[in-house]
Image (cartoon, rainbow, N blue to C red; front, side, top):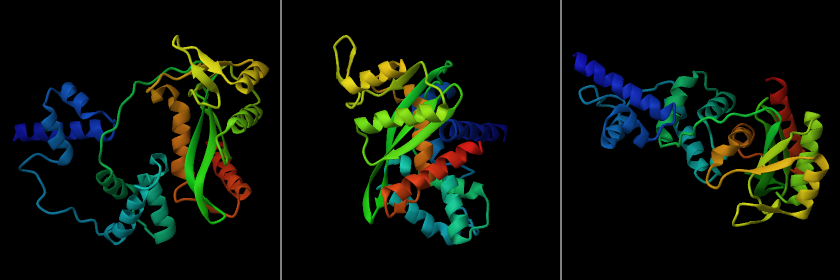
Length: 282
């Protein structure tokens, strides 16, 4: 009996490491000293053989809403990754749109099962004072009855967690420069350096020695504000983890379901109310 109890604990620890901490199957196998096949079985079943359920879990409070949740998650497959439903967003919509009165846990368990998959785990980075991160995100939106992409400039100061967000019809040079200007006015400060992607609006060419040849207008902006530009490493998206997180948060919380507005001015007003209203209450 003790051996079975220890086996159940191992299932729990393995599943927690994957679904809550985001560890890969390879890393879990190495950490727990088990094979990757064993890890796969533990991720597929919540209990070891002998404790396995013979019938699906009954969720009487959730069953009336299963079709609606399935529909939302199916629609998500055609949406950008960062513009898909989280369990919290599904819970909010069920409560606001469908009269759902139960709690978060059963919704989270359902969504976890539907979205089950691996996630890469990154080591946390330190964020010294006076440095920022900038990026552009995008999401689908309906403006004037036409589905199109909205591009939003995101700027984050990782040390203090201060952040700024502004929407544009295109992620062009003008949007980059305008976004910086409004962000610095919002912060009432200018960072000493900013971390960027090697976006073509900012960088003309990367030389063999790693030097970034900037566009003329980008260099002029850096000179005006006296900012040192830095660039993330190729394939290392976690270098800009804070601003990437801001982009993802904005998409998941303010762009699901897909917003519909008569024009860009109305849409930008909506995002300003959402983003800055949220920041003011944090």
